[in-house]
Length: 228
Image 1 (cartoon, rainbow, N blue to C red):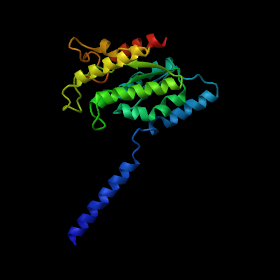
Image 2 (cartoon, one colour):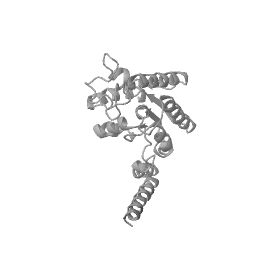
Image 3 (spheres, rainbow, N blue to C red):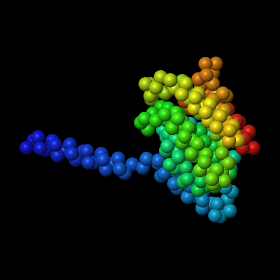
Image 4 (cartoon, one colour):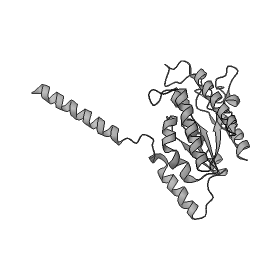
């Protein structure tokens, strides 16, 4: 009898966990749903369309958190979500970029694919998803800016990835080559943020991945050269 109760309790826990998993909204459409609605309503009332949407992960998410005035002053919309891989961004690209009808989209992505945040992935998959976002943007007459990600030499949350910098360098190089071949502006944040060893300069980041405010100021100057 006791054994049956234990089994029943275990099955109930499994069912609850399964139901919770099914309810999870993988791309996190909800994160910006209300703000997207507000932007579209404002456009109906005569507000300007965004100059650019910045699509990305925690690097972009933290950018807005640390310097929201930069976004407000330049009519930019931040659409970064911490922890996301390129597949997440591709899934929400229509809602968080295309629907807002910006003049530009700046795509900064790939770190979390290499860090295996969504389970197995690869730098090649990241490149393919970035290219798919470019194709979606261009099909909807949105100009694209491609950006290198930060040149991280390690991930504090994923120490088993030993070749982080090599993979990031590969991805940044391939994104730059694709940008040049397709006449797309490329913003090389990595070159500006790197130290003499090629990793992110500690002056600009506390963990090699996420810029501090000084690092974001370097990035802002580079981005605005393209947007202006």
